[in-house]
Length: 206
Image 1 (cartoon, one colour):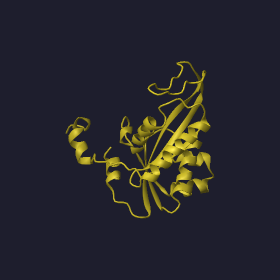
Image 2: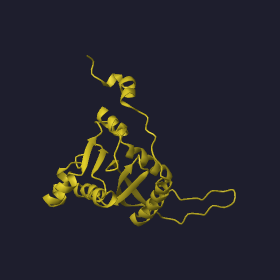
Image 3: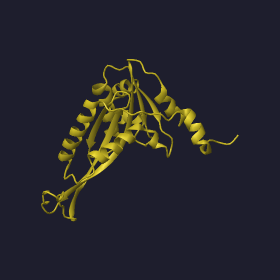
Image 4: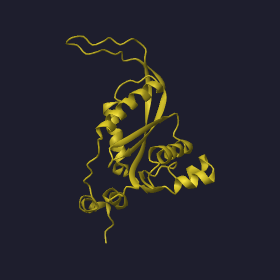
C-alpha cells in the first residue's frame, strides 16, 4: 500500500509519466420494444423487458497528473488483450516517454510474462524495459486511480442500455474526448502519513 501511495507522491520528469490501469465490463442490452420518447412534463419510457446481447470488456488507462484517459474495448480480457493494451500505451500513446510508471491491481494477466505470450521476445523485452509496475495490495484496488475514473464513466456514460459494441465504442469515445479536452485530473490527497493513522489497524502490531 505504501509503495503505491509513494508512487503518487513522486515528482516526475519530462521523460516519465504516471499511468493507472484497471478493467471493467459492460453487458449489452437491446430493447425488445421501441421506447416512447419524452414529452413535455413526462420522461421517456422504456419497457422492462430486454434482450441480452453479449458483454464487452473495457481497459481504462488513466494518467491522473496529465488529465488524460484512454478506454480500449475488447471482446475478452486475456493475457494477449492486456499485452496489446500495454504495447499501445508504450508505442502509441506515450512513445516519447522513457519510463511509464504503471499502477494496477495484481490480476493474473497483469504480468510481464503476458508480453512474452503475445509478442516475440525482442519486442516483449523492449516494452518491458519502458514500464515500471506497481501493484495495489490485495483487497486494495481502491488505491488505483483508474478505478475512480471507471466509476465516473459508469455514472456519466454507461448507466443506460447500450445495445452492442459499436454503440458502446461511440459512447465511450465521446465521453473520453470530452474529459480529455477538459483535462480532468484527480486531486489525490491520501498520503502514506494518512494511511499510518487512519489504517493503523491494518499494520502489524509490534
